[in-house]
Length: 249
Image (cartoon, rainbow, N blue to C red; front, top):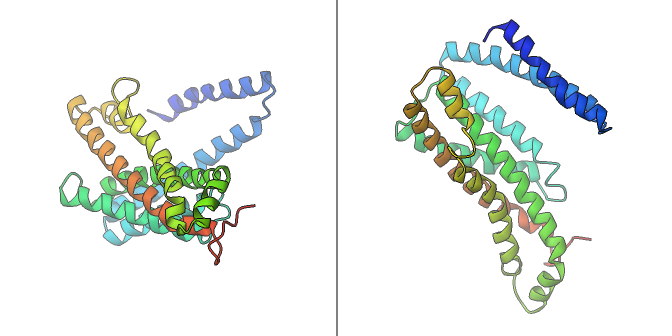
């Protein structure tokens, strides 16, 4: 795709702007800002990756992945309002999930430890983990509020905070993982995912693209499960005070 083709394709942006204007949604400014941010951020990342790909040094790969994880952790702060050390918990959870997933892929030789393979794969793992963590925090906040009386009854009967929260923790983890599971169910039937589509557009064999997409599906299910479980179990204690009482008001 050349620059002119991209400029012509940008006409598509007029559609959401028109719909927002016609339906009085008031999101024209947000749409324009998101477009500008996307263009600027992607351009910067593109030049940065071009430099890193040429250097081919592990330290730069690791540094960029850490930057991704840090930004993802910071972006979960809003969803985790009220949770102590939420950014730290998110960072540790996403980092562990990313490290374990990438390690398995490299050891199995599904991918090589090179910038052009590690960075795109890590980006997918980190972004999906970030979304899962956000869902987990939202589920925790909502469930503790809705089931406050149930939790307090269990505490009054002598249950510790983990036992009293067991059902909430289970539901929060399940609720954060289910979207990824549902997405996996529709692969190839409802949608052709980004990895597969990108490879096919790049001229790769559809069968090769399928193999990579299956690998991506495995790694996302694994990373989302790990990051969700860790973030939930590391954060649920924030909903209780030192006297083991719920501190939600």
